[in-house]
Image (cartoon, rainbow, N blue to C red):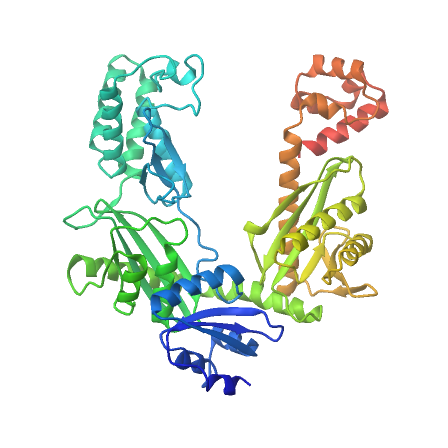
Length: 588
């Protein structure tokens, strides 16, 4: 069938969609010449990811497009629509924080990740290597410059005014010239010129020292050290201040390592690394990566420097900016440095990548075989948490192809106010999969519950009511609360797992992930309750005893430190024991 279809494919630009035996799209690609590209998958031998992909292909579709740019746009849209499991470019890439200086009459500094220029007309600076660096820089500038801190104006000056970190814009009219001067100095700093701020801090530090205010002088010295050391950027020998991104690469043993340098104001302000297993030709993979890199909250610079294997014309048309392939000089040297860093990154991480694949993709495939499933791309796992039936919550985590997909995690606040694991499971499974049906969300191939036969049966019952055919299995624990076996099939059987196997490692990781996620949410919910509402949860504590406890202990920590004997001065001994147990659990 495939051979016959290949004979009909034209040699024109377009996109192709690979399908497995279930008709599910597992890979989307583009090509200048569709016939040549599609034929390449079905001739010769392949290795790595390509071999794995080819082994699953039973059919394909293709769409002919007028140009390569249109094919690239279509490919991006198809990947967003179908999220095929072999299209991993950018799937795990993070977005970078930027610092935003607003254009309000009284400006503020914010940290943003959504950097859509059409919606944001303010000044954006970055990207920063991580949110901590961005936050520290904002705190530094807010410490030095008395900018507005409040989102809405209070009726009277707040604490920031009284510690000289705000000019009291809510009450006083500040000269426009003074505000503009602050903005200009902040912009100079964010563009890489530290001289003005350094001079300000040095003068203030000297003044505080002369006043014998050594604590204040020490604080200023620490600020100065941060600017001179932490915020110092690697200077490059470029003669202009054009914003540039440089894409270096290294390819070996089926993996493409990419290193991006962000150059702003002739300084390297940050870098980005990515290692991906390749399916298409390296030049196509790298070109596609660069094109898609700017689809995910990364500002386009004025210029991008790329190696010669990249399709320069395609990128220029798609991104609508200058693409430079340097032949000599400092730009060529910077490109080589970026590529050398890509090589080092791959060589340092190759063994870890291989080990990770064994513990994720290969372990996931082993689980598929053990459970006799046709496919296992998505696992959804549930866990419940409560204290004496109160603060009742559930958590759902998602693993795709053996790896966690944190964007898909979900929290559920349960309506039941009693300790009923079966009732909780019934509610969360119904809510989740009714939504899957009504909103046509991605359906799991496997549902795992962190519980025994009773919870498995409850989940199966709800799925049957919803007319959903999804396998449900359970993770059984031993006496030490460690993953011990799988519970699956109909009737339910216990499947022992070798504790030294990668499959055991995967199941243990899944169980830890859902447990930690749910417990974290549980703590978040219960931390919002006041001490009074916490005491309301204990049988035997009425208003009179509650008021006596509040008067004596004031807060949870002091109450927790009290002994049973001390608590029993107010409470009956049984109630004191219940309260002590509750407090020990709720503050873990």
